[in-house]
Length: 371
Image (cartoon, rainbow, N blue to C red; front, side):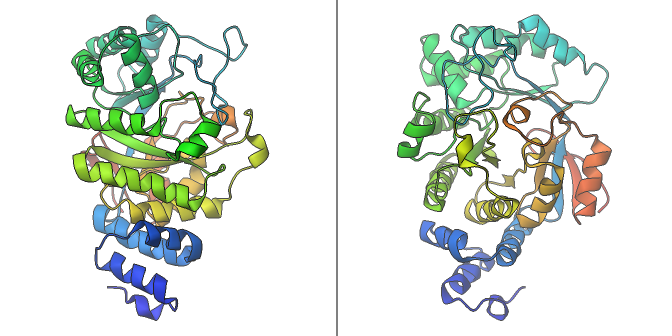
């Protein structure tokens, strides 16, 4: 066991470190202190303690691909580089047949999950997307369908005239297995009024995920960081997630998403550094003690930062992706054609000193590789 007194002279940080090593929950004030006063080496040390307590030396990945039905959207968020108006040369609106063709690209190959997220299309309701799920399940029954951000769900369910409970139940009957964590952005209501004023509220996002959990539909959670939010806003965001997780235990993973500046109205803000990325991963791992997995989404961070993040609390690098997503490449992410083989992912993990574990969507082990 590490003795914090040997490494920490600041009394406030020493108290926090002792709570972490004693497996005690830190407070919002202590989380803010970590952001503001703890150096990166200490954060890596403390996040590593929590990471190994929960997941040992394991670092997870999945064989997956994405379907992005459309980048038409009724909302116009200021941080978004993805939304395009109809007839714009970079806009698309895929039919069911076109999306099913994407599924067919993987015939004969081992694939565990399809991730379906896109813009909030003005004309498509719950049954439109439910029929897509039904066709995918009919074609490939064993494929886990993780689909639709809370923002998409809010609109499609309201458009169809159902309550949240009814709408999520119908989608589950169509074959929906889990939902991703998108649309959370930052929960602070004042910032939300600036960066995404039209979008569903933070309370609605939380309500949708709580309703899904209670219906037996697990989900992930995200936080958009590195724009105009402060450390206090990040802690507030994670505190709301932690409280909901205490209640439902329905979140599988937390995914910090870095604001990328290209091709959107907030580009003047710039982007935070890699140091800030690692700081944020570490505090997230320490603070969210009840969410089992912390994901470094490598198409956003780049492969090298994702690999480094494994030493700052993360335990999941997402998956093979198969060059099927454009959300982050359109915002300037370094990975323009995101795809990795399982061999490449295993090498990244091994070289960082961790054990690669191929998983399914619910983090059941499929294959454990040598450390």
